[in-house]
Image (cartoon, rainbow, N blue to C red):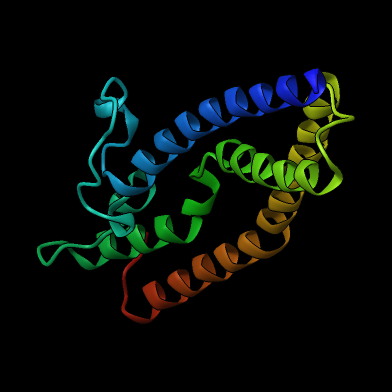
Length: 160
């Protein structure tokens, strides 16, 4: 019984810090200035939405932008996946997966060391999967976007 209580308390503490990390990531995904302005606010409001997050906002073209600037912003959007803070999302999902795994297998035989070990193993798996996706999927898309922008620039006689 004592092991179950310690395990539950450890999971509650881990979830508390995980939700704090998720809140910071949510601010980055929904506010054009990210956490720089709102880091000290307890519950930062969702001001603009995910289409205006810190990694996307710089790439949004405006009506007054010239064609070279629009092309550069498009190039930035094609590579903005590399500006994401991947470790925060990986922690969040690894804690979710670990909690489900621990609940299915029972908390009576789990100690704090086992909980932390499972979370770290899940974190490494999720993080490596995300990095593989960035290297083998997103990077290829970004390279094609760069190539298309160069071709488009040549076709409309703009030399960057």
